[in-house]
Image (cartoon, rainbow, N blue to C red; front, side, top):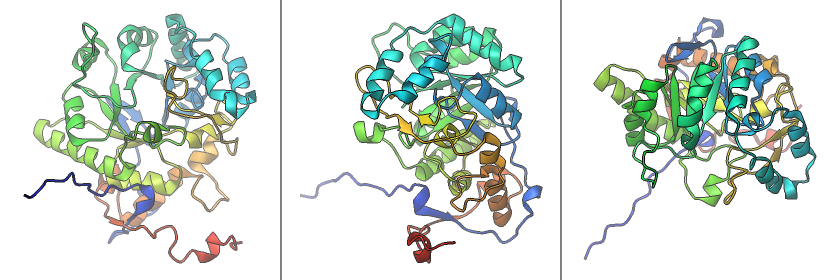
Amino acid sequence: MARDFKELRPAYGFDDVAIVPGDITLNPEMVDISTSFGGIKMDIPFMASAMDSVVDSNFAIEMSKAGGLAVMNMDGIQSRYDDVAPIYREIADTPREGATALMQRIYSQPIRPELVAKRVEEIKKGGGKAAVSFVPASTKALAPVAVEAGADMVVVQGTVVTVRHNSRSLEGLVLSKLVKDINVPIIVGNTVTYDVVKEIMAQGVHGVLVGVGPGSACTSREVLGIGVPQVSATIECAAARDDYFQETGRYVPIITDGGIRTGGDVCKSFAAGTDSVMIGSPFAKTKEAPALGNHWGMATPHASLPRGTRLTVGTHYSLNQLLFGPSSKTDGTENLVGALRVSMGYVGAQNLREMHNARMVYAPAIKTEGKIYQMAGLGS
């Protein structure tokens, strides 16, 4: 008797693929890399992750000045403590073996709605765009507080978010109701599958976050065993976005979130179909980041199942240098905007939508082919 076996289809991450140059090339200064979400325009398609180690009020202001957008985690220390500087110092000074226990204690303090409003007001006073993130459980109570204080965008974010969710509460978070009640763009995530993206978009949201577990400080893939490599996840979710657009006439952007380390990763994300990228650890290494060269994920302080770790990433460059250079490094970790512009020029893409059409190939040797001297450390 024949048996049906579960089949595994290949899935690809950034190091597995390469972008194929186009038939026409452009000067980098000729390409348009702007994007928008629900009417909020960004000159550069870069968002800073909603992580306490990355975004405080000052960082959000500076990211806005650079033309991007930083999302503040309103379930973290920014909404629990008036003065966060001693908290960052305590986390930085704690030995690695005690870091998670310390953060579990720090994050056990209650969230204070007045601090949610205060942080939004700080960002707006400094001339920045205020994008704020909530987990689904706190969105109904706190998102209106943030919007009343002047928030420009609300991000509803969890490790995995779906429209159909069973719980014991009388009424969970209904995305379509939130869209009607909150008069600002709403971004929802995270997910990695075609059907869920279309269902989320049908709720009226203004963007969808793509990525489960690829972040450098996230261990969901090790602890829970879930996730899809980012290139394949982006391609699948971009297909859902395009089909939804064909069916409804409404274009809902997607954001590849997590696992992006270099300019090459950024470029591959757009070739796979994203409209923006959300980045954590590279921003955590900037002089403007608040965590003194440390980095941790949203799930690190989870009370019963921590799914992250505090990393010591160091402080390596300014925000401006990370985004715009100049760079003396050859590893692609600086001048991310410049890398995107040059790659689009080689592909012949005049804008991000055209970059979606770039061909990619499966290329497991892309980082090692012909690189024997680099790998041996003999480069000058």
